[in-house]
Length: 441
Image (cartoon, rainbow, N blue to C red; front, top):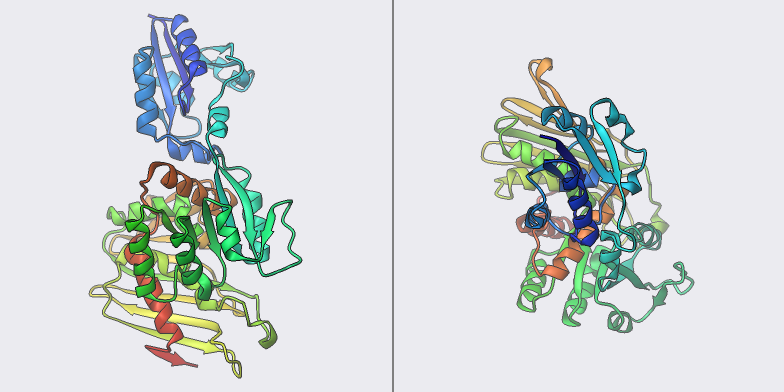
């Protein structure tokens, strides 16, 4: 019996895929089809896959050509699979000509003719794009526009800005928020946190979907109001935080919650920058706590939850200015059976690491931990230590957009940030600005 093995993502299964499977099956008696996992696609930089793994597997199954379907999950797996299943022929589309010649050491390699004029990328790009507008800080808008180019299914249609000299690569600039909303389907809010509630609510009332940079608001009740309105009117409201959309960070949370390091007893998160701010530059700038606080609080609340007993906010403020602007803040939490702390600051520097301590071992993520692409689980016996690597492209911005677009198109989504985390972060922001549980140094 001649065994043939082939691989693919098979997103939006089309005639080209079917032709490939048919030709591969004709090469032998038994066809093994490897369907790439979501994580492996991301590691390979294939971020635009729009169908979940389960559906892609089912679509391949329905063709009737596959005798066995496996999942491709890691680099180098093709060699392992060829040897494990004793495949005689490796078959792949001719657009990969020469790329898999290294497999000739293990089996015959056959590059099959590709069906011209059709591809998953073309199908995705032909779907109606969602017109997104951006409101926020000038330097960040430029970064978002650049990263959004790699995401199918969206088009940046406008920017709302108070800067009358702003120019964003031929994208329309608006100085009237109502006119801005009239020309888009959805909005990404990255303005100063004090403006979030008003801008998000106005967008929702105009029937627009919203993704908003954390913190969603500076008040728990306001955040609850926004989510309730969005749900009632069948709109997507997504709080985004790039760290939450890092594959490595998500995998780390799963391992910790599964008991890999035992019962968590302590979490320490540090986010600092030497970007010092003068008194004259404060107005319109994010304070250290609003800029870094949501990121630092994320692992605490996602792992330990929000039912802590007590907390203490220790901060150092710039003096003699009407705005509340901190250069350094430390927040300490006491839980029923654990403790946690965050340190954030602009103008002060510390090692930006995340350490999660448990009864069996601990997780270590080196600086800058908020750009997580690597972490370690360490134990008493160093021989048991394990390192985890996951590719992180553009700091997670593309993943945020992909989640947002899928949610809009399907009406369903599982946000990477738990609702309780969003609400408690808003609550702590409110307490900070009202100087509750507050020690000033």
